[in-house]
Amino acid sequence: MKKLILILTAAIMAVSCSDNLEDLNENVKDPSSVSGESLFASAQKQLADQVVTPNVNLNNLRLWTQQLQETTYTDESRYNQVTRSIPDNHWRVFYRDVLKDLDEASKIIEGTTYLTDELNGRKPNKQAIVEVLTVYAYSNLVETYGDIPYSEALDIDNLLPKYDDAQTVYYDLLARLDVAINTMNTSLNSFENSEDLMYSGNVAKWKMFANSLKLRMGIMIADENAALSKSTVESAYTSGVFASNADNATYKYRNAAPNNNPMNNNLVLSGRNDYVAGATIIDMMNALEDPRRPAYFTDVDGVYVGGVIGSRSSYATHSHVSDRIVNPSEPGVIMSYDEVEFLLAEAAERGYAVGGNAESHYIAAITASFDFWNVGDVASYLAKPEVDYASAIAASTSTPKWKMVIGTQAWLGLYNRSFASYLSVRRLDYPILVEPTSAQSGYPVRYTYPVGEQTLNGTNYDAAASAIGGDAPETQLFWDKFYTFDF
Image (cartoon, rainbow, N blue to C red; front, top):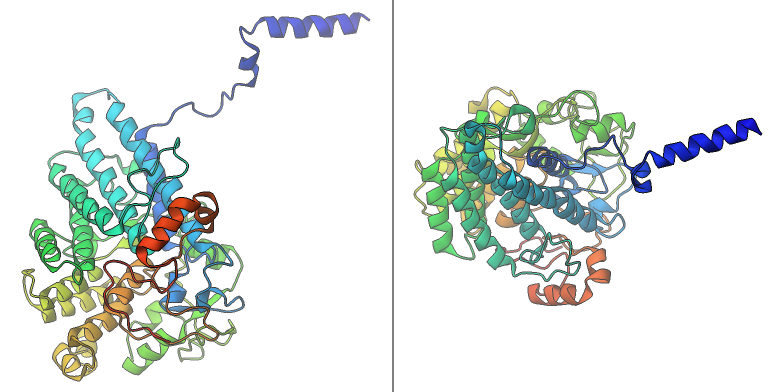
């Protein structure tokens, strides 16, 4: 009885020591608020992971550009977007984990008073950098889906946002990017090293990335609005785009999970052997005797073998991605110098003032790719009749002729770049990809809208689907005026 009295007394004293019983449930280990800088860092990693990952549930674009082929489960290489809810997952990552964190980061940074005038002076640069990454994320969504929630997006009180016209959104993003570029003060600092695992707070590098993104967006609308495309591209070039591989926008991964490169996480640590090289890229590289083959892939008894697109392909008898690609600390590429030079080659062919000419930028792009992969003897490769610019143009069967030449080499150079390669293939329609075994659709020039949107935001989904011409994989987006992948 005495023990019972003592226990009850202790319990009463414990409760009486608290002003509010709810305090007993307070989580004292987790912070009640986070800094804008930490939210920016989180958004940056989520964006990089989604762009880089080969996870079959998240990003199948290496399959769609026929760089890789599945070994066992072939749905995704056959253009099936439904089984694994790929459009839903990409939508969720970009809206919830990237854009929402960037939105909150901007608000918190704006409302924060830092300890010194120097730190407060960094705020405009930080806000501009957050804006650049926001534009990158939104532009990806437009390029991937078409019309998207934009003006009413990110409002947690509005669970049924309307969809905005893709062209209108894209043009607004270009305007926002201009403001961000003009706001950046390269004489001042921004984020600390640990807060920015892309450029360690280097404002000059961020400005170059912003201009390179502006260049790409300008080229994307070239067939839709030639005048705006020209002014956008020339402005970006004048302001300063990537000038070497040292300028590449890459995310710094580390040697151990969960901060390792997603290629390492999915292709090594998972213990799974889900992918081999795709026959489309292997066959072309073999025909060209491309010196980058050992940098891209492993060999099988001295030869490079690709899996038939859409068919099961034995892991043991086909080439795989190279050891470098699955290194845990291999940086994740968001945008690269070789892509910029291929874009400038295209711009030059369109008559834009971007310095040099199409051939010089084409050579610079291929050279940048070889340098990135530490492959020598680029001169011999450039001298091949199929690669030499003048010879390749003369032999080209595309209209205009440069589309086949630039498109093919850009596709080879943008190996392992997922969205960048997918953009290039859709815009230039080269190289001509093969029809997969038992293809589930024509070539998917867009992601279909998420099933979740169809069921939960049906009215706005129906309006968006109607506005773009139907929610089908083959529906061409506003900037995509040509389409040659007819199976």
